[in-house]
Amino acid sequence: QVQLVESGGGLVQPGGSLRLSCAASGSIFSINDMGWYRQAPGKERELVAGITRGGSTNYTDSVKGRFTISRDNAKNTVYLQMNSLKPEDTAVYYCNADTLPYRGNYYLRFWGQGTQVTVSS
Image 1 (tube, rainbow, N blue to C red):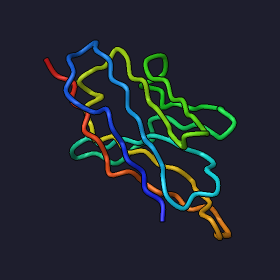
Image 2: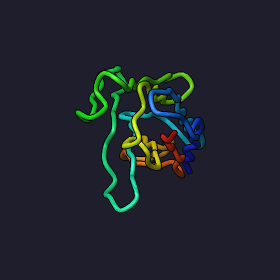
Image 3: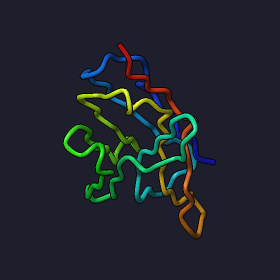
């Protein structure tokens, strides 16, 4: 079994910064793509940023230039540095990891429990 634990959410004023972390643990042989999604009240979950094992990244247009995704493969951890935060960034943020478990034959996508980010004055 694989667990993803997120941390770093909270309340921040507009223009402020937060850094989210997500650590994967358990029966892990390899992790391929990792990413961050978010879901605001009344809206569908959307991709915020993704990163491949090799470090290639992609971002949704609304966060380009403000958010940076990174990962530490040795620690099975993915990060999301969020700068110049706006009220519209308020959402629950979820991490995911495409993971090949030990003795597994294919990759499975695992999700974290979510962490609340609130941007408000």
